Length: 87
Image (cartoon, rainbow, N blue to C red; front, side, top):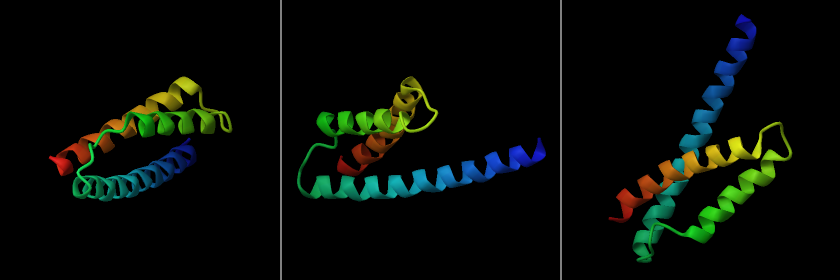
């Protein structure tokens, strides 16, 4: 069991690092939106992100419902950061 827990801990570290990288890029996007005087929200793009997660979930053992929850959580954090940047 300890070995499995260590494997999970290592994967968790990778996930957090990848999310941090994604947020850095989202921050850059927020700055670009501010400079272009664009709204921080783009429902079409948000839908595309969710759709991408749903499609990716079909390639692995993650339900569409779980994939949607993950996508929505990441979008929520990303959009909150972009909102702060664009205000």
